[in-house]
Structures are given as C-alpha cells and as structure tokens.
Image 1 (tube, rainbow, N blue to C red):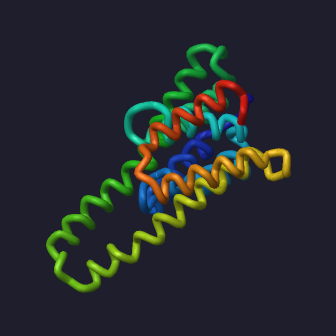
Image 2 (tube, rainbow, N blue to C red; image 1 turned 90 degrees about the vertical axis):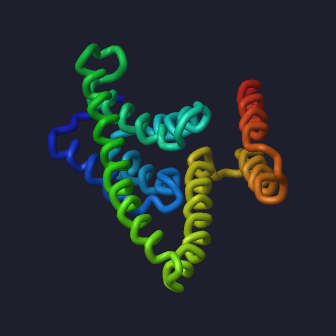
Length: 198
C-alpha cells in the first residue's frame, strides 16, 4: 500500500495521538477503537489487516504494552515511503512515523500523569480524590471491552465466523472467572492459528 502524506498530514498524526494520549485512561490500548477509526477508516493510511497485525505482533512481543503505537506509526511511515522495498526513504518515513506516534502518545499523558499524581498524593485524603479513583474503574473496563469488540468485529460479522465469536466469549469468561495466566490463552490462540483452526 502506498499513500501520499504532506507535512500537514504528519502534524495531524502527531496531534491525533496527542489527543488520544489524554484519553488513554487505563493505557493506550483503550484508545484502539479510535486509532482504528482514524488511521484505517477516516484517513486510509493503513489497511485493516496492517492495523490488526501491528496490535497482535506488539501484544505477543515481550515489552511494554505501548509497542503497538510504535508499530502503527512504523506502518504509516512505510506506506508513505512506498513499502519495505522502496529503499532508505521508506525506512526514514517509517522512523518518522514511529517518532511522531510515540511522542504524541507519551508526551501529554506523561506530563499530565506526573502533575496529577503529585497533586493526588498531596491531597489523597480528600473525599473527591478517593471517589475519582473508584469511579475510573468502570470507565477502564468499558474501554477495554470496546477495544475487544472492535478487534473481534474486524474478523467478520457473518455467521461463518461463529468460532471466532465463541472463542472470544470463552476467553473473556476464562479471564473473568479463573486465575489462568494470560500467556496460556495466548499460547492456545497461537496454536489454533498455527493449525488454521481459527
């Protein structure tokens, strides 16, 4: 996939990730539905398959949960440069995409978190501070459910995809009701995918 991006587009990418950074309550993964809307549906900078592959690869890799943002920026940059085999310019655009996406997602939330945590620690006994902390839990859960919903819908909504829907429901119940480690479920999903059963 090849796209054309001018400096205004690169600035828009940075600004959109900066806005999402301030909405990332519970982590950047909770903003995946809007990232998908912006990068795939609205701007057409990524294909749905590229978007999903970036998230899947980053979540499977060891390291911070935020790696998927770098991969999304990398994919946008590669597409702007003409693909992996387009030479050094594509790699430079990919690096620019990583830089802008990561700066955008990290800078505002890090600054806000630092200032808010200092203030919250100084005022931790206030009733409003305690109520705010308790009230954020359902918001985070809802955002994580929305992320799972978007990723599941991207696999298809017709009845031929019922095994994926069933697998999603089973994994959700297992996460909710058992202490089974997530790596076992990721491993099981990898085996099912390896044999092309899902």
